[in-house]
Length: 383
Image 1 (cartoon, rainbow, N blue to C red):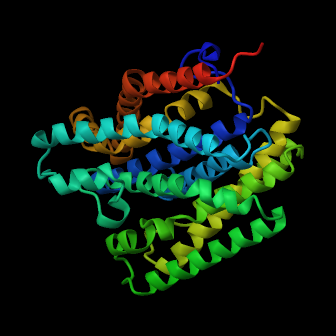
Image 2: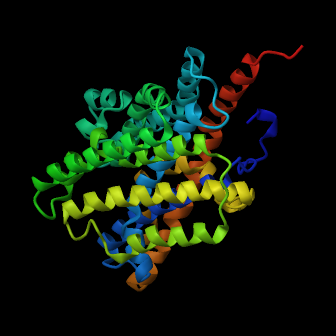
Image 3: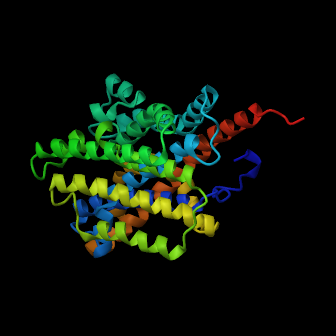
């Protein structure tokens, strides 16, 4: 989008506003998960009934992010308006990804490093800094922020994406989708094999052995690439809004059925990761078709605000749990546990939003504007 077309934080609605709506849902799920875990530990309760279970399963919001990432990166090469595959297109892809992800990520890493002396027990080593600088924390672990594992997964996908799409686009759409589905099946089999060696209830071992490593974390990304390949071949399909709503019920039921991680059944969790990735991909595919029929579907301003801040929110929300809890304890003396938990949610949400907005304005937006200016300056002038 040209720089001159930007209007405030929410920006203009994209070509497919439903993607922004889903991105907003993804970050809200992640924030809800960490609120629920902190609330459960501090107050012994997560109020909300079925919504409490939904919050505890908010970790699946990361897989929704993966599906969206796989689709959006795939459309850079496979979309209906994609540039012809060339060296210039690949370089433009890497340039845009670097401007989009690296400044804010490295800025947050630096802030965590500088804040370490004031954090009890935090002692980041030089090796840890290099690990995060090179996006290796999904294999080597993270003592900065555990949530950064997903950024390492995505960056590795960015490296592999041009070659993957180059090969897939030389195949028929059906064959490419079958190969992607087969790859998801192989990954699922590997996840199940890894989960079989983890003791029930040992979440830390499951997380670092099965959940976080790139070679196990890609089902959602592969599902998103599959949607991109299909969309590139049939971008004119339309669908009614009720179909999207009906399909949205399926992952919602999955997330509200039970606390999957809380039961410690790791093979079941592996199946849930793959199943939810497929359902999210189906929802994205249907949402695209609905936007062809109803271009404004999903373009609600609040969702666009949240989507615009989603990357900054993801990076900054986790270290704010402890400060938000301290502020909540000072304000919640004498309150019932459920009320104190809801107060913590309000404080935590407000602090996360404020910090994300500051990072967006001070660091993320300037580099995005620079990225778009550079691209506009490189366009040939029509004569």
